[in-house]
Length: 507
Image (tube, rainbow, N blue to C red; front, top):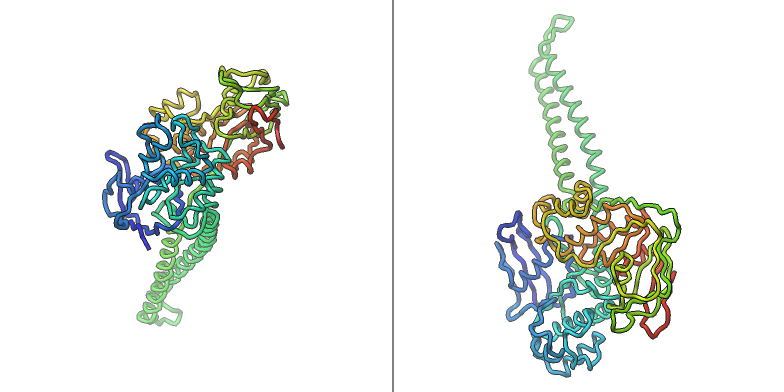
């Protein structure tokens, strides 16, 4: 058994407002297929960097097995202009037959070895780097959100590959299907520390829900108990005071009461009142201890506009061509008010191009994409790169209400202290939440979202799902999270290769 142990781990970045970890404790086996989850900004990537040795703990220690080194994805490629074979030899030092075998398990044909790395598609580059990561001798793979920008086929291949991996790994992902497919343990970064649990994501999520339900029931019981004890303590204290006053009374016969006896009874009743009060305080303490790890996913609100026309968008023999030939076969679809259409297809097939064209960008195309007149749009771009400055300045530039924007971000799990930091210092998930929150601040007829869930944590994904199901906006979107698409889409527009014939809306 080869264990990694975190003991009283404390870490904060120089000049930061608060600790990322404070006295964190955890122990896990390097043979486990371990999924790492937690809300954005909780330190998932930071933990990987600590394990890799790129960062040093502020306090406590990390104990790893002797001779173990941690490989990391995504890793920089020193010479991307070289062939994949040369890049592989540089990164892992394995023999060609080993590299070809591993790439084959990732669905990459042998001829890719002779192709320049920078000419591979982003999905192929991701799969190649992951395969090479597992070829490093004595390495413990640290995998940081590998599914971002991977299409459905790429995610399925990745899940199968990780499930069949001969060794263990630590995987950061917010993709529920992937975590279910390949993980046998979960490591959660919760409010009060790190928690390791056996099972895949669904097992962990069920345990979290069961815990929250138990704590909710206990909270209700303690509330009733506190009320009962408070009333009992008050009654007993009043009886004690009333009895104490009788020590100085004069009875009708002229006899005085036995003050010693009365005082004894009064003291006994007061002692009983104090015991009841102590029980009440203990119940209050028990109640306060509840929900320390509960992640509150408050309901979001969206106010979509209603257009007088039923058909908001219509594509007729639409095809995108940047000069190197059509990206997909001519496609036909119609988007009606209340529809939520998912654009599907492999990476690079033109899904984002259709969204940009719908948003009014000058995308070279043939065929037609006709919009209803007077259409108000709200767009979430694929990338959050380039966001800088303060949240206030961002709200002003986007002409959205600052208070509402901050409220949505708080509901997404961002702490108030985060708003004092420059946006460029936020995590990828936090910046993507900012883009999504801005869109939710806008009332629109049509929402165009390009991979809105990239880097966003599980709780926020579920919040967005619930919002869409309740608000029913008109939505044209690209998203590779299978669970999300199944939950919210009313239909799909499947883009086919140019030789496959026309694509149509599928319901």
